[in-house]
Length: 67
Ligand code: SF4
Picture 1 (spheres, rainbow, N blue to C red):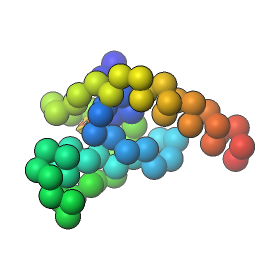
Picture 2: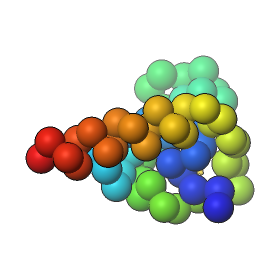
Picture 3: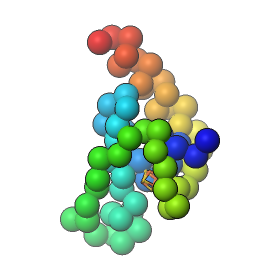
């Protein structure tokens, strides 16, 4: 499934949420909004983040085991 967690524009915040940087990265405007999104959501602008997905899974596993 194409979730935000697997999206190139997602910046992980915690196990279930992250910031969507699609506006920042597409416009090059660092002041653009980075809305908080749910990791299981998605949108039309989704782009596969490839291996980064597994790094994110490892990070989530790590924080959920230590908290
Ligand atoms: S809202 Fe869309 S562009 Fe933003 S992280 Fe999720 S799938 Fe990617």
